[in-house]
Amino acid sequence: MSDTDALLVAYVDGELDAEASREVEKLIATDPRAQRAVELYRETAGLLRAACGEHAYAADAERLLPAPPCVLRRAPRRYGWAMGAALAACVAGFVGGAGWAGRPVPPQATLADEVAEYHAVYAREERHLVEVPADRMDDITGWLGKRLDRRLEVPDLVAVGLHFAGARMLVVNGHPVAQLIYTRAQGLPLALCIAKLAAAAAPMQLERHGAQGTALWLDGAYAYVVVGEAGDDQLRAIAEQASRQLRI
Image (cartoon, rainbow, N blue to C red; front, side, top):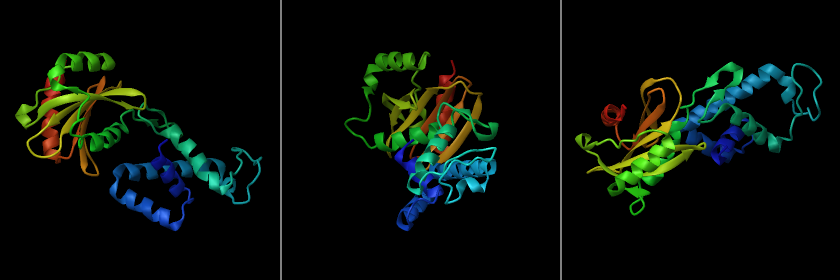
């Protein structure tokens, strides 16, 4: 769990002072990912209270509670965030799995968030925008194709105003993600990210992540994300052009 996630858990648990709480509230107001995380952590806390009863959270419960169905020791207040962080880690993550109350966590749940965070940094690089430049196309398709266990073709997106600059590899929760980076006449570069993901096919979904926009879709074996500082119409047009060329 990241420092930001731990801070959000501490906020939900009421562990922060007034100044820190105000800073977190500013983050929540502008960051959709933080908003969703806070909702998840609050739901988790509510489920625990429903399962264990409010007595499990009493300030004087400095002992093992004998009453069923739940036996907990109340941790000292300064360590409450660590307990919350451990619980939250069980219900979040890119690779998915069973969630609280038997609800599965979608494996693509955080992919768009993660690639948007990466791209916000890499798109501002100049000398080191890519790991492998476009003139080494065989290296790019061979290297990333092997990591993704597929034949990789780099989409030609000139028709939508993008020029392929090269590629790099990201890692999201231990999974390789190919990031194909494109420059344009005006504005920062955009990217097409590809991750192997055994999930049901899903239509395109557009989201905002601060200044970054994403268009994500799944074909049943892979997830694709177009990311960058662009409007929804442009992201959709790029994604549709890429999708037609990526069908193999």
